[in-house]
Length: 228
Image (cartoon, rainbow, N blue to C red; front, side, top):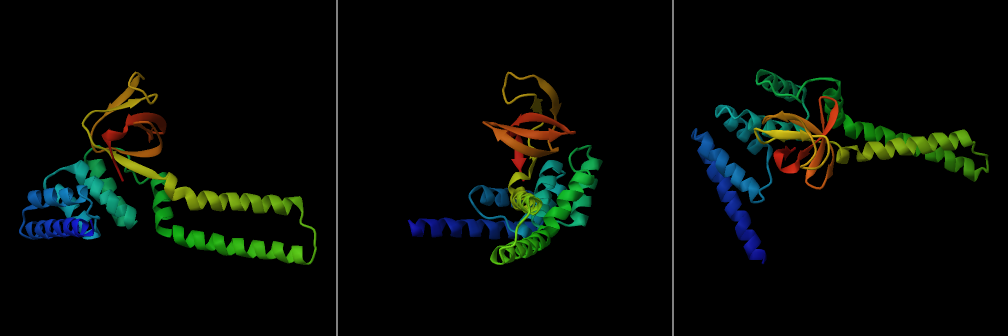
């Protein structure tokens, strides 16, 4: 079993090296195909691979895939220049969801500085608990207001630490994506959007994703979206 896994990993490495060679020789189309095949077979996407795929699809004028791989790279390395490039490409191609608005900038700063925010909150939590323990040791009374503040603080800390799991986005992967009012094929279709638009995902029910589109909640099929 172990040898089979090792052999599969070796084959994937060979495919990636072949794709690297094709990319270096200017064969962007074939290189992209080999990269995507390796990814589909379980090869982890490296940063250089993501950038090469974005470059390859830019040369092919495949804007949705260009935005997808660039957005995946942005998820790993939040950078203002990448965010603006995404916005500029989307604007030039009449695609929505990439605007550099307040929501996207909040997410950008959260992704970039979340570790520092979390560290600050944990240090503050340690101080608060230290004060409470000291009061308990000295048998000093703890007011209801102080208990309420501590509870509210812990709630905020819980929300903050779990926010990454609740934040997800995707890019529409088909030319006709139906936005429905409910997670059902019988539900009314409110709008039909094309390929390459970015949507914020706020949950899932069966095969449907609950998405935020122009500040309204709709449902689209899961297989119509490339998850980022």
